[in-house]
Amino acid sequence: MTSPPRSLCPIALALDLFGDAWSLLIVRDLMFKGICSFNGFLAAGEGIATNVLTDRLVKLEQAGIITKARDGQDGRRFVYRLTAKGAELAPVLVSMVLWSAKHTPTDAPRDMVAAMAVDPQSFAMQVIRRVAADEAGPARH
Image (tube, rainbow, N blue to C red; front, side, top):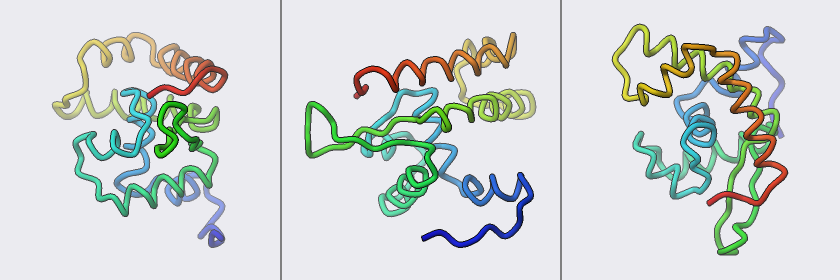
């Protein structure tokens, strides 16, 4: 059971879900890197602890941002995917990438940042359409 929100301010509500150091990185990995497994998230490079990853995955699933399903090739594993609701975070993440790239050297692929900068809205819409197509098709590994 979740606790009531501290306020109904839209920013406070978003921070209640994403205001930690890990949730948006998991969304980033699903959205831009194609990572969709527990071990993939662990290997992503930021050093998330297994208990923290488990907690954030549950939180994101309960919020309807991601889904969790058995891996069709290995029933012992799970595959995580963004939902349409999760994909709608694309404009937020694109804006964050562009802001960070403008103000701080990053390791984001230059071609991706350049494509985002040309037309951020179109780039975000491409991500949203790709996630919608993924929801309709077989799970990625």
